[in-house]
Length: 98
Length: 487
Image 1 (tube, rainbow over the protein chains, first blue to last red):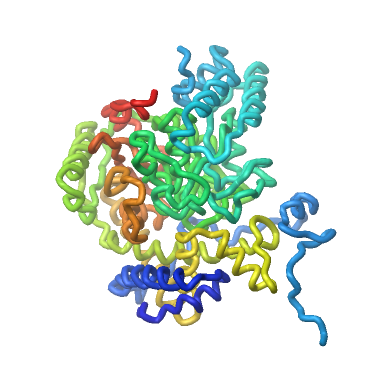
Image 2 (cartoon, each protein chain N blue to C red; image 1 turned 180 degrees about the vertical axis):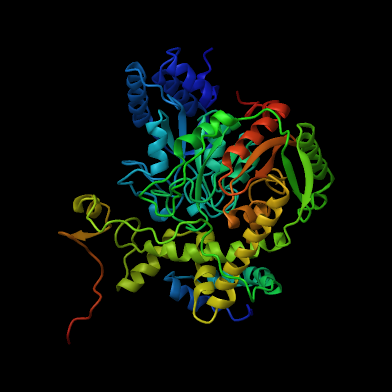
């Protein structure tokens, strides 16, 4: 595990968070410090250890495929920052044809 | 008699059920208390006087109609990451500052159904990420035992509300220690049940494989009453456990005879300083005097807890918090295109600690690092479960500090990792999903300290029973009153 390589701008792009130059510098130093601490895990021999995703006994909880109750459309749309009729309104995604 | 705001949940329920006082009268007393006091403590982000009176009136009607409600008229503080229809659920974040819940969390609903009265929604570290409540974007909560100190976190508002008699039960959530550490800092009992015991439906997700709701209370008995109300399977949370719940409130004990209590040899309390070391040695001695046999157990992975946790929890949070994108609810900051809108919304809506954790989690899950960080941490997590299983071959409960110091002053932990260290003793139990609690065990410089007790999966009844015996025999919590100068 090497932590020298963390490219904070690239990770922020993946995480969809705009960072200021000051944040890139500050978070970069803090994350490198944290990664230095978590690198102690490389001391643990886990070659023959299975990964744990969660600790309890439930597996593949299923139910009948029947419609249940859900929030009504008006309630949901009323929470939206911007709406248009029955839709969430967002900035244009597909460019107009030239 | 007229200090009903000071009553425990058990006494309140018994008085309301017995017709000695109405739920509405208890509620008015608490609302008055909150009105005069909370300006200084800052436990509540949102107060709900109308809803409280409505719920109290309903509880009174039910009692008059002959029902006996286990939490009749009990004032309840709800951490602000749990939904309650028609109220703000902010998670202490600007991104949800004005968001109104369209439904109610199962745990909150079960409390109300049992007769509890929601007084308000409490402050917290943003999205439950923190150990001091200082990461809230929406308010400052102060420790009722010293207003210059933090209440702990992330459930700091619920802990402070209960400690300062602004509620009898606070609901909190614990991912790596967020109920137990503020419990210890505020001189209250903080109890995290087994992972999956309490439904997470309506709890805003932070790290889904670790998050668990539990109560903060002034007595172990009250923690048991709250647990009995909220525990149990919920079809709305497919990770909630379907096995039957053993009621805890009727299984409280007064001694520890026949129990073996494990002391973890890797948890060396000498490094916490002579005074704290002496305090925990005394606490272990008190367990022994109550009839427990002390045995040394080993958690070889103890020192790897923080590293494991600070990969798994951020990885899960980076995924869970992807939903906050400015499209369907919460804050939106407009941008030239949809990508810019996401980036600006999240930049403005999240505070520094949330950004750090989303970044570290995104990194740990990104191509090329996934196996080295995330999968490695998941494998390390398996070792914690194994170590605890081996330890519980030799003992029934494990005792340790709940936090490595008493509550610290504001701005004392400027470096993120020093804040993370606060959870050194609580994280291992979280990784293994174990039930664990903090119970008051003494004072350092007039500030409360907590003893952590942990039990095997699903052994809540044993855990609460033992904590009750310790509390009864020691009564440390009652040795100082909160806000002594003010009240």
